[in-house]
Image (cartoon, rainbow, N blue to C red; front, side):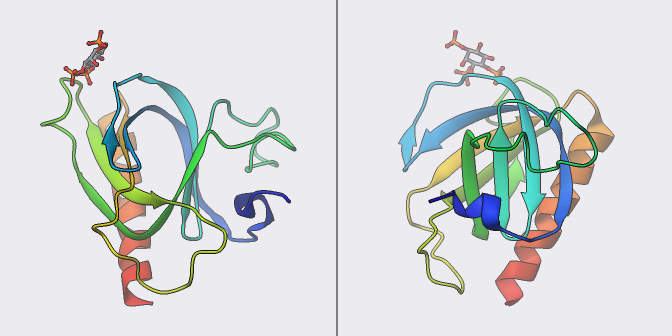
Length: 144
Ligand code: I3S
């Protein structure tokens, strides 16, 4: 079956290239490995692809059949400044659960070990826009 994110009809709220490193997976700390990532915010999910789609702006989901490198559910996710976690500037720390197709709807528990990412851009305004967009989605999902 296709990953749920590819079936998801939600409108893309924001997409773009950011520098990204995963720092924890399933609650276990990982060694940083910074690299560029095509990041897509849509519905309740944040999805990371290795590369942007070849034809912009039509295929916002990435190349047909391309598999996301990672995807997380923003329900119950936490956002914080990443300044204590990196020497880079303009860093955002995202903690969220992996996107599981059979996950029940409704609020999710923050204490379940999840994934943690750092997102970074050399352009402060770009990172700020991502921060606002993610915060708005997380707050909306918290109210649902
Ligand atoms: O938080 P750290 O451990 O200081 O992060 C730096 C290291 O992961 C480093 O790699 P190695 O120690 O594996 O060689 C990376 O190259 C740096 O980019 C990491 O720090 P920043 O401050 O860039 O997030």
